[in-house]
Amino acid sequence: MIWNPFARREDTRPAVDTAQWVRVEAGLPFLARLAAGDRARLRAMALKFIAQKEWHGAHGLQLTPDIQLSIALQACLPVLKLGLDSYKGWVGVIVYPGDFVIPRRQMSEDGVVHEFDDEVAGETWEGGPVLLSWFDRPEDADGMNVVIHEFAHKLDMLNGPPDGLPPLHEGMRRQAWIDAFEPAYADFCARVDDGEDTYIDPYAAEHPAEFFAVTSEVFFEAPDLLHHEYPAVYAQLRQFYRQNPLR
Ligand code: ZN
Image 1 (cartoon, protein in one colour):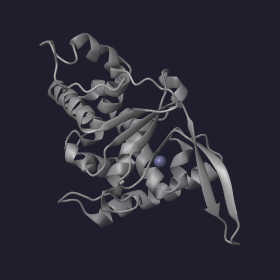
Image 2 (image 1 turned 180 degrees about the vertical axis):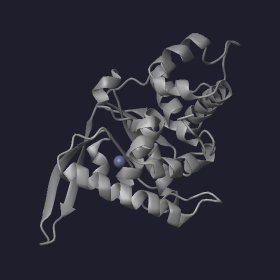
Image 3 (image 1 turned 90 degrees about the vertical axis):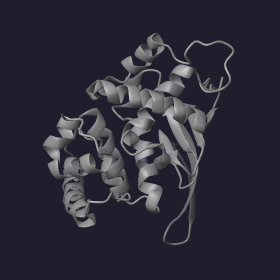
Image 4 (image 1 turned 60 degrees about the vertical axis):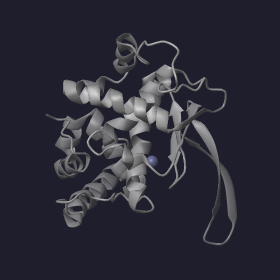
């Protein structure tokens, strides 16, 4: 079922009642850091987001209003202070049950084409849809926040292919961003190479764009940890998202 909370309604009950909000938000404990006013704003934004996008359940997944609400709340959290316009220019949200496989073709340096199946939890392209895994039990997501991750990529893509440097706001300096992220990324890659069991998902060492997406997840889900490990990155993300979850 694809649900549009703003579709013409036969009765006058609210599209989402308090019990439903409470049920969905119970699965998103990091929302508790928001001030009451911001929480109400996030709910309103989530309903708008659901109505603006085209939703699809893939591989037989039945998209329920609870799933859509959960995804929408998480998608809107990073843009709570930036506005929904940050997500304009594309419409599709495609949701898979658990991890899914993307067939890839890659040419190696010697010109040989390799085809393989890549098991992923999310994917997004410039101007294209967002593909997400839905896990009924959050613990199956392996500590990842797939939604915040993919939508951070969307923000990164607002100024071209994802490179870990999204368009910065007035008053932010590109050099300050680089001075914060570059050494943190180098340090993190070295720790992963050394075999350290990092709390931050080692997938962040794949590419600067992944480092930005993964640190964005940690910024919202475990801000104290990011602030402790990479305070300069935390400070830049705080300016970028215009939020301070640590407060
Ligand atoms: Zn990614």
